[in-house]
Image (cartoon, rainbow, N blue to C red):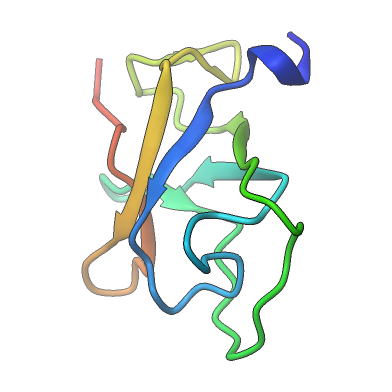
Length: 99
């Protein structure tokens, strides 16, 4: 899989993430987590904004093997949405769907 084939982060509504300023500015995100949540492992809760100059975020890896879009730890969704989670989960992949 090349970077042009990686699913895009189509939307991120997590306002407390350093990579999110008018879209996700990370080059790639990692989806992981446990206890029924698919956490964005790239979430960084700092006041300083960072990342690339333009919005190009993609899903670099997914360790949620119970997701129907996971094939060999790669995301096969056409794109993902990231949003606030509940409890200790600050940022979740909202596209996550169990098998």
